[in-house]
Image (tube, rainbow, N blue to C red; front, side, top):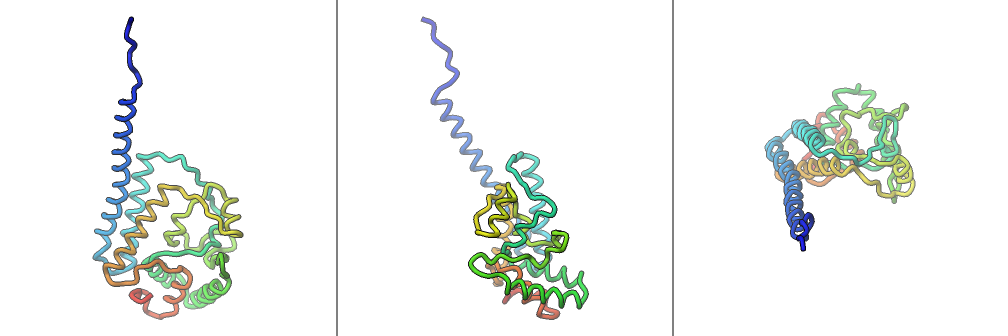
Length: 229
């Protein structure tokens, strides 16, 4: 009787499984290496804006490298003028707040800064528990972010596969699935910013963006002060 050729076997499945596990481990290691690179390049910088410049550069490079080599079909439905997420409360590392405060001080007139401080204070009053939803004071009449190029990392990171989920979340707080790769990269960046702050003996927890920004803008000439933010 003629022996049949073996095209499929349990041993072959086990071999491929081992290889896939090893590749998976190497893939996970890439994010560890990204974090290590970020921390190494930021840890000795004591200026928050310099940290953010380095952090942003690494984020952009990582998004480009992963995007070119790991095609991702995860849906992103976010478009210009879609602003449901602009009602969510935002947390961010202290360096982010300092950098945005400096940007605003350089960009806005004293009168506009006074108006902005009033808007920020109103935002804090408008956000009621349990969801703390309110229209972001940086969302303009055209439903666009007025600090889009300098918006917090949490805002840059946010993605949605379906705008209706975001709209519903404004009302009921439901979770919204995020683009896994983009979310992962920004998560690494946030973690490393906090790790650098801790190394320098500064505040190293995420802070609420609006209250923290208001507290900085109310301290004239102290835009770089974040040890006790």
